[in-house]
Length: 507
Image 1 (cartoon, helix red, strand yellow):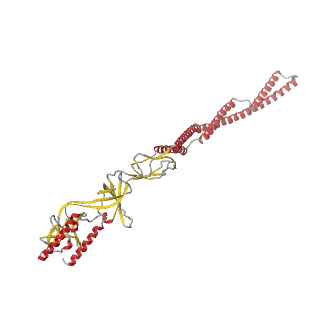
Image 2 (cartoon, one colour):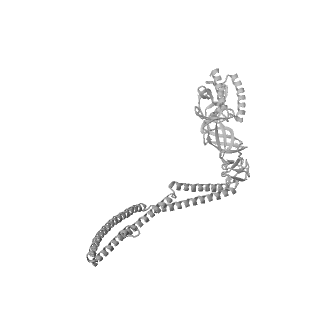
Image 3 (cartoon, one colour):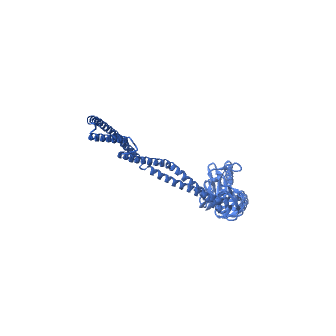
């Protein structure tokens, strides 16, 4: 390899190291034993190299042997402990606060009453609402009863009314017929009587002339003639009396009495019709239609809803506001003796049992993170098991303006030593490869063609392209290019391809 290739190799090596160092949280560190051993080997190499040079022998290079083992990749960073579950609690009803059991920063257990209320006013509201329900129900029932009674009256007045009107009309026609008939009969009777009177008077005139002739002839009238004249006068008088009676309405004939009787029936029918129509009119106005009934029913339901709300408010305030989970009260707005409206904020509770650490990762580390990965979380010197349970799908800007993605590490076994809001160190186990070929990370070089290693075969240095996999701070997985037992030059900047060397294996 030419000097230019060596310089290019060293430049690519430096770029590779810079890229490695730029990954947040990853540290390239060589164990102390390797550092000490390296110093010894270098010194030995210098000494040997001097002697070999003097003797014109191949230079000594430090090598490592590719082995099969396990390598784990981790991401080391820090974040803030926070609760996975938080809730703000509000006043269940308008009431006066009787007692606040805890202060901000204190812990409460699940089911513990945090805020209690004075329920005197709510009890009065409940009684008032119950009375309103009773009043609305009674008003509704009374209206229905009255409406039903009016409906019954209306039905009684209506049923058969049309038939009764028809009967009255027929009765009126019948009575009118009787009157016409009576009138005709009276007229005929009067004419007959007048004709009879005329005949009697004509006969009386004849008998009176006869009487005059008898007196003139015999000096007196014949007794028979006198009897006839008397009889005619009586008949005329009776006929005149009869004629007079025919025009006298005070004297009722048999037919007139029938007319009067039928007229009475007609009058009774008309009176009944009038009563029914009056009852029909008065009752119809008191019948509730479906809309009016619905309105009354709605009033009852509205009163019941108000009563139920009053009951719920009383029950809720009576039970007080309880912690729904064990946690820390992070803010307390409620004050003893203060009156609050329904829905007013009282306090905020954050769980101390379901906790997590929020970390911010850059785009370089994002590809290695996956939900479900295990992590070690250290808080105040104590380490807990953790799991990556959520990775945000949108990046945000950090304090320096760089885009970061928030990732949340669930703490599996929190205890009383966990404090919300404190810093925590996080080591995420991002990947692991078992039973694979591994070499020190420092032995991997990079150029324009990609990653490669210098291997020593039969004392000659060869350039070997490799495909890397999982890497830790010290070692890296070799997926392709190397096999177990291969000798790898640890520092590629000291050799060139084709160079003869004397390998010295680091233990």
